[in-house]
Length: 309
Picture 1 (spheres, helix red, strand yellow):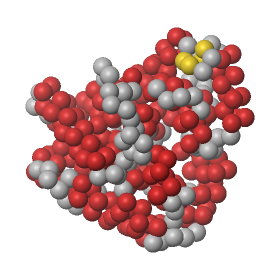
Picture 2 (cartoon, one colour):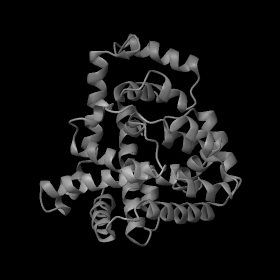
Picture 3 (cartoon, one colour):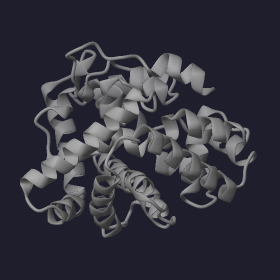
Picture 4 (spheres, one colour):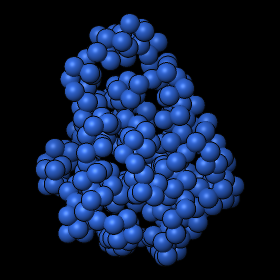
């Protein structure tokens, strides 16, 4: 799977005026999450990093899996499956084994950092560097002081050296907050008794995607998806191919619990800003910088993909 193939399927513009429901009237934690997503994921989607890792022999999905897994050190495949949570295990294991056979961890992470920072710097070339540094420092302070308990990807990333320069610090801060939320979200979903496929199905419907589309992108087979849908219907969480009222309430509660687990981060961001208006200004700036990443073809323009992660 090369980047051109991914771009052809993933970079489909959303029709004008279409929004994902969770992005409307959402919490500060959710709005921060949506504002940073394209910055945090710049290493996955930008052409520069894809080309740099491609020169090391990794294709698009191998780059994503191996780079992210390398934040954990040199884990066994089962550990990668457990921490990634929502992907089909045999696919993840095979991709991870292939990726780590082609490049050493230190070389991989160095190439990822250098190429991503160069690409993000180009995307934000007209942005006030001093403002980027200020925002980065607020976010880094929040992330570095957050609790890492039960959050392996977040904790592994936090142990990595923080890149020099405002752009590098901004990217790392956004990555950290994203991984903290992702680890927290998985914990909430597991506590709610959800399987990996159920997590995908409930999320895709909650953000506004057609059923099975997001789940299939995580390499689950149609029979497995259909069996999980039947289970969710038996629980009263699906009404046909849509969330039932009970299912939507349950998924809203999962999101609220995820927000709650990021409480210390949000409190720190608020403390780092002078007032509520400054917090809104910070989120708005991040959203603007993320839009520049989208405009640079370094993140999918699909609002549903951005909302789902």
